[in-house]
Structures are given as C-alpha cells and as structure tokens.
Image 1 (cartoon, helix red, strand yellow):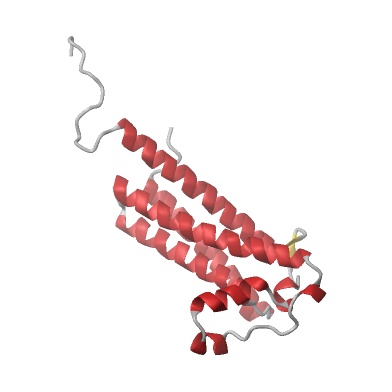
Image 2 (image 1 turned 60 degrees about the vertical axis):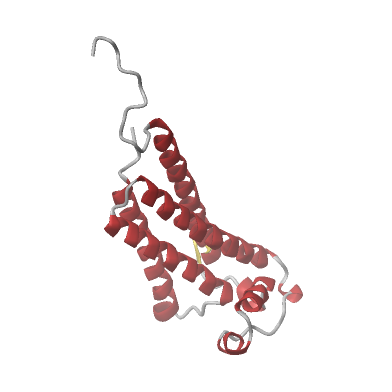
Length: 183
C-alpha cells in the first residue's frame, strides 16, 4: 500500500508549510517577536520548500519529475534543519560567549558577499540565543527543527519509494516479469 499519491502529498506539505509560515508571520507581527538572522534563514528555507511543493502539486509530475521535486524538497528541508539545529545549540550556550552586537541585516547584504553574511549568522548573536516564546516547553527553533526533520524524513522516504518503483517498472512500458506460457 502506498502512502498517498505524490500530487496530494505535495499539496499536504504545501499546506503544512503555508501554515508554519503563517504562524511565523503571526508571531512576528501580531505578538511582536522580532526574528533573528537564523530565524530569517529558516523562514527562507521554509518558503522555498513551500513553493517547491506548490509547484509540484500544480504540475502533477511523473516519476522523474517527482524525483526532482522531492530532491529539491530534501535540500530545502536539510538546509532548514541545519539552521534550526544551530539555533537550538546557540540557545543552550551561555549568552556571555556570544557576540554582544547583533548583525543588522540591511547593512551586510549591501556591501558583503552572501557567504560571509551567512557565516556571521551561524556564529551567532545574543538575540539568536534568547528564548522569547515556548509552546509545550519547546522554543520556536525547536519546533522548527521538528518540522524540518519531519519533512526530511518524508522526502527521503518518497525519494526511496520513487527509486524503488523505478527499479520495479522500466521506463519502456514493457513488463519486467516474464510472460507465462499459459497467458
């Protein structure tokens, strides 16, 4: 039994990503939480994952297209997992070890290469280590980490499933099983 058809599964991941994005914007604009650099990187990864899943749901790809879409989804969810994991680690560190000045996001993008800005964000600032909101005793980066891990597991499972099905049925449309004499 298959988990679900690929198109509807892409749509469900799109809905989950859109809800997570909606919650992050609600917490920023209605509750007043200010996102740090790592939070914004996680939001970008989530937005790209959501966009890829929307395109896949609308497109309704075949076997090769599903493989490519799930691979893109895996890359986005792995990037989100790494950034969320780094922020969870920063929250466990003493704040005194982190840099006191926070990185203003408008200035570095204008004059500095993107790779350097991302490296500075991963070094961490004091604002990345603050826990300002919890639900069921889990901070926002921990919830984000759980979501991205779930999407990574789903993407890996679907990639393996697509490869398994491709090994069972050849592209030519002919059966990979021998025809019986009585057929």
